View 1 (cartoon, rainbow, N blue to C red):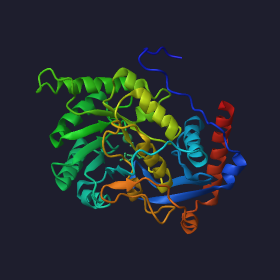
View 2 (cartoon, helix red, strand yellow; view 1 turned 90 degrees about the horizontal axis):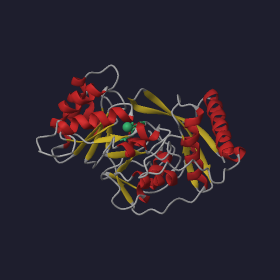
View 3 (cartoon, helix red, strand yellow; view 1 turned 45 degrees about the vertical axis):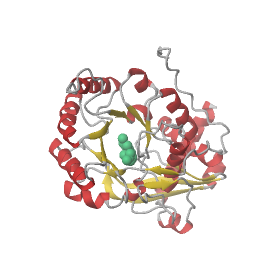
Length: 357
Ligand SMILES: O=C(O)CCC(=O)c1ccccc1C(=O)O
Ligand SMILES: [Mg+2]
């Protein structure tokens, strides 16, 4: 165990309350493979296990490259959402952002059209194989399409070094960014980028605010210690995802302990996983939400497992659980080898949770 400053406790352990039997989980599971409309961080088919739990449908969809230890937290989340009562909702509708993949600038209007009414956009930047000029052109296209009142954010997904991040965010500052999500990989790098951006902001003498605010995503959801960011002052706000953090209740505990404003986001889930994110956003204490959430991403998929998809209307999504559609589950059924692969993965992650409890 590392030493911790007294002001922040360690993150709560993954506690898989009462674990349902593996056979029960698998009997309720359907594996689906849904194409994306646009390549999103290299993903062109999104695979997911949809489980018809006693409390409602739930989803297990860790990315393919994740090892079992990491994927086990996603299974804890899925089982918690499918088998246990969830924290009470404090709001009925959740504002969401448009999510703009790393497309060419001329494709931006077509992407934004899938997010009706959204007044916040999050734009992917620092994509491998692209240049800062591509990012500037894409962000400019978003700002021009949405107008001066919209909020525009960027997400670099760890794609920059400290120097690249400072250069890029200085160049992008003319578009008046709401925040930059995970510009670099490590917590120390985030601290350094943020410090340099504070220095660059000295147009307001004595201000300790950075030129662009920093949000942490991977440094929260992929970290063994999701509170390290908050403890070291590496970010102005946190991106919180229910599946990787082990479910709605554990994510709420982490938010409370971190004490930073948050934006709830998805992992490119089907409507079932989005429902979990909406539940988390709806349960957040007053004043913790830092704006529109990244939960509109079903609009980036070319299919879904419900007829009543959880996509934005008027810039928001109503908090609800979708009704599974058997025809769609069959239509997007994964190939037999992929079905077997996912069921084996569920079994291995289930064993990890069983050993931990
Ligand atoms: O936050 C959003 O707008 C959508 C979700 C999103 O960007 C995302 C989706 C899948 C995997 C990673 C990420 C991410 O935020 O980095
Ligand atoms: Mg992100």
